[in-house]
Length: 165
Image 1 (cartoon, rainbow, N blue to C red):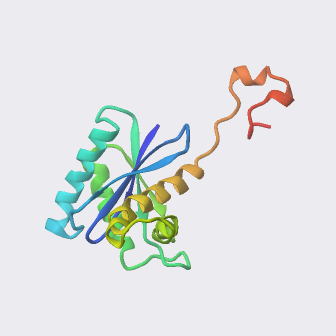
Image 2 (cartoon, rainbow, N blue to C red; image 1 turned 180 degrees about the vertical axis):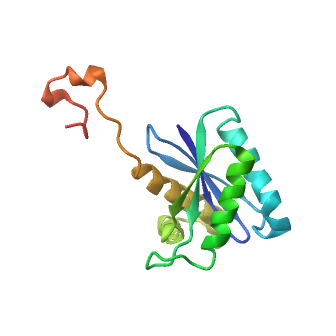
């Protein structure tokens, strides 16, 4: 299944694309629509358009939205806002929406770009999409691993795929 990762921000929202088979997440783009604009409606529509373009409206897929928890794991001021926004995305998109702890994902994005030759502006433009990829990567890493296939069950132990032993 394919997933759209979302790092919501007050001014910019980062998007990433990944799938459950490869468990890879790739930064895709940044939407420059404020979360607070018109009650979030324009941002929801932009996310839906991106989902339709990147995954496909009739394709199986889901959305993973970063949940801003405090460092101690408790809800932050924004948590209620994001939960409500996620419910609205799910209702509009008619796809499953998951929430994923986003603690340190922006820092992860900053660390990833720290030694790059990018200018401050270029880093700012990429940061949110990289954070979305980190959120999605964390979500995908937590998915249960599929069990061995029927074909794998017939293989000797030394030839079993990694992780299935």
